[in-house]
View (tube, rainbow, N blue to C red):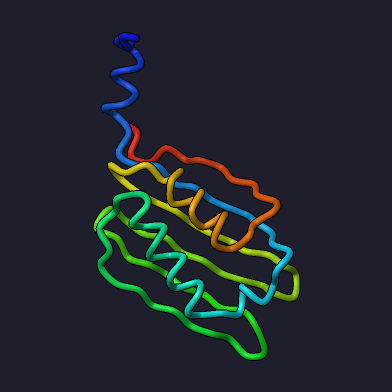
Amino acid sequence: MEKTVCEEMQIKRKLGYHFIVDAYTEDKSLLEDVDLVSKALTDAADAAEATKIGLKMHKFSPHGLTGILLLAESHISIHTWPEHNYIAMDIFTCGKDPTRALEHLKNALKINRIYFRNLDRGMF
């Protein structure tokens, strides 16, 4: 189906997609596993066909972790609160589809409840 002029203009005038995600999992042990979460982030970037630049993770005491995967297209970040089965994520990409990254993270972290907002970035 052919796009209207307005739809074409919207596509061309948006630089990126920014997903702000609140998620919950039944398996809070996943939220303490730095190796598993690191792999989930890098595999999510691969799923979105994004270019990975670097990963930084930090484990807190007594629990929880935070991490950011820097992408050429922007970033994917994660912050966990295992005591609440809660995950906060941020997926910001330009030129790539963040839904594939989010779908991968949903499966890898066994997310059973998810809420997200999409912010269109770089609107002129």
